[in-house]
Image 1 (cartoon, protein in one colour):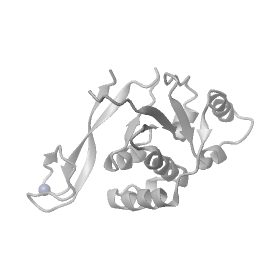
Image 2 (cartoon, protein in one colour):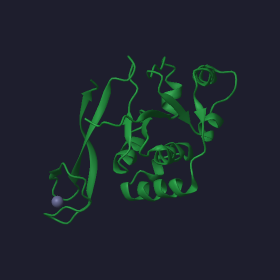
Image 3 (cartoon, helix red, strand yellow):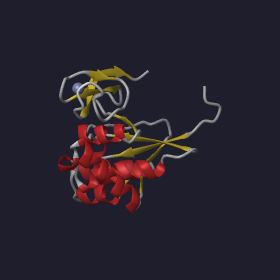
Length: 175
Ligand SMILES: [Zn+2]
């Protein structure tokens, strides 16, 4: 066991906010980015969900340009770049900024592309389901050429030399 306990900080993407689900994160900190708040129009149910989270302590932070560039570059490599919105990129970048020796960054999202890029960047994420947060994906690498599966995070297949793509192998219940 780790003797030093990190503070958990959850980074909420649009899907987490729009889930409208009561998010109970055991008093962990919640953050999101300016682009997310701009996506919500005042007056609607979505805006209400957002305001409830603000009342519960959701804070808004702008990610660094350095992290945004890093996420953009990685998403081009993974093939997720065209599926990620500006807001999605900011969410992943903010997680990169937050993750350090004292803080554990966890992205809360149902978006597969955000999850894929987060995984490649070694960032934690959790998904939202109907009953709250109950599932966590397990990832493996699969060769685009020969189809062989790899547990390690490698980019090129040692057997055929083709590119390795990250895929979901199973969903597991969070203990
Ligand atoms: Zn191969």
